[in-house]
Length: 87
Image 1 (cartoon, one colour):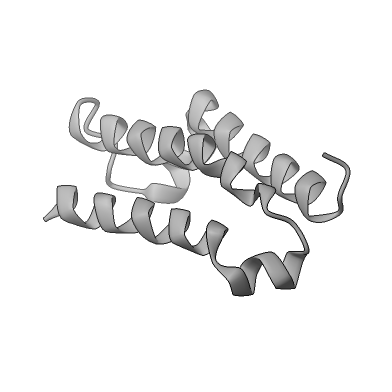
Image 2 (spheres, rainbow, N blue to C red):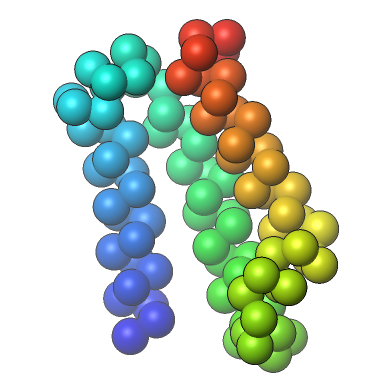
């Protein structure tokens, strides 16, 4: 089930980024460029919970794993820069 939910989540985010309503709302077609960061973040989290057995506290995993935290921060920065037309 995790594989299916992961695929659906990634597909949903990608469709949201290219949706005409999203493009009109944010006045940009460039949100799709944040997709690799989302992909990496989700795959990194899945790696940590399955291979490193760190799934007991999602908040702790997010704040203690630097690569995961970096992907979230970069996603936020890129999203803000794209939405405000700086990229």
